[in-house]
Amino acid sequence: MIFWGTDIEENTQGLDILGIRQLDQGLESNLVNGVTTVSARGRYFSILPWAIKTFYATALDRGRPFAPNELATFLTRVEFLIIAASRADPSQSAGGAILGSDVFADEMKAIAASRAVALPESKSSRILNTYYNPCKGLGLLDDGRIGSPVPYQITARGTALWEARQATLSDNSLVDLLFDGGILTKELATRAVDGFSLGSMAAGSAEAKLLREAFSSPWQTTPSHQSQLDQRYRRFDETRSWIQSWASNERASANRLLAHNLDACCKQKQGSPISLAWADYEWRRRHHFALELLLSSVCGLLQDIDTASPAELVQAARADLLRDPAALAEHWPDAPKAWELSAREAAASVPPDLMAGKALPFPAFTELRASHRLLGAFALVCALKKQTRPFRDFGPGSPVRSTSDLALQLIMTADETPFEKFIGTFMERCAIIPHLQVTLRKMSGGQKCSLRFFPDGQGLRLTANQSGAGFSNSRLDNTINILVDIGIFCRGANGELSALEAA
Image (tube, rainbow, N blue to C red; front, side):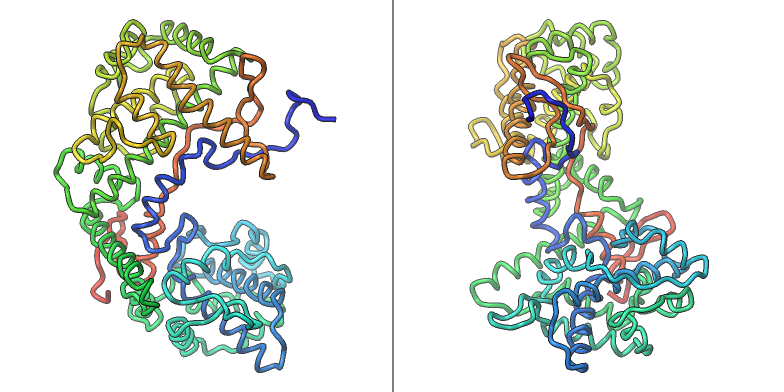
């Protein structure tokens, strides 16, 4: 028998525990033409169509009917070979977002030590789940026809990539090895570098040229979908130009580009549609961070109190902050005075340039004690309200679609309510209630428990499942990596990007 309040035996850190991740990620996904938060390397876009067509052709030549489990094993072996070839490639870093590198770490160490290793017999391939939809979005693969025994079609674009790769893969024994299984040695892994290492695709190769075309030119689809497809490609082309405009003089990390672009748009130094679109994404992502910071403050306060109502949490935060009033002084000098002010006055006292131009994450806030994180979350939302006023389309009276909207609406309508009462409402409506609603809904659907706390009478009781403030991972770093892999950009020694003439 399990009783309410019993220790949780199986839990998870969880994703989107406030239910706002979809908002900022939805904005970004419209700008990167199918690139996801996990599709990080360009060569997978050519290897996956090649692998599927090669499996079909080999099975057909041998008179074997299509078997889904055999395809899964074949793709797992392709992944295995990609890892081995990438690690044997002197130009390729050990990591580099290589699928399955964690799963086959021991086998890769053995190959590096010149020990032979058997190719896997498992069917745990990640390449299909990770790259199928992105490949489909570029017109390289498609769903199988109704009634067809095979689940995936190779399109004209996918076939052209297959032909380009086949022309350079002179060692047919590798295909036999992938299809039948067998032993992989360090020598074979080295011979596979040119064809399978994620970092070895030459910018001038036919394979790279076809991938650049797939990312830059829409294919012909049905008239009802062509306009939408063309728009996706236009946005991606604008994103590519936008990346280049920012990345030429500094290390091209997504968080830096996003921070500097947001700051420029807030100061009205940038105003192009694509700059504003990325600024819209970034301020929403910062809102996400602020609200997760707010949630982490609730958890931190509960660690010291055990069980407490929201009002008692606010009282504890006030008492703790007054014992150490200088903790937020560098970021919000008037923070200690906030408890004596109205909500409007407290919001007005937040510096308008708080964290402007600085890249996520903000350790200066995540490393604060819980009571200070509470005020830090409030301050970040207040600052974003001020900074984004020149271009933000969300204002007082706008429809509230998410907890992020609600938080901004509360700040915008802050009045003469005492700050202590306001911050309690802010905490309850923007962290406590959304977390309980989202997490209990997920649990009711069969997902593992990711509750940070639960109601116990009039109070809240902490669970053992804790984590710090988070935010949505960006697709932008993956987009940059892919554009480098396929030869549109070249990354310099300091991380700066430049366009390649081959592109």
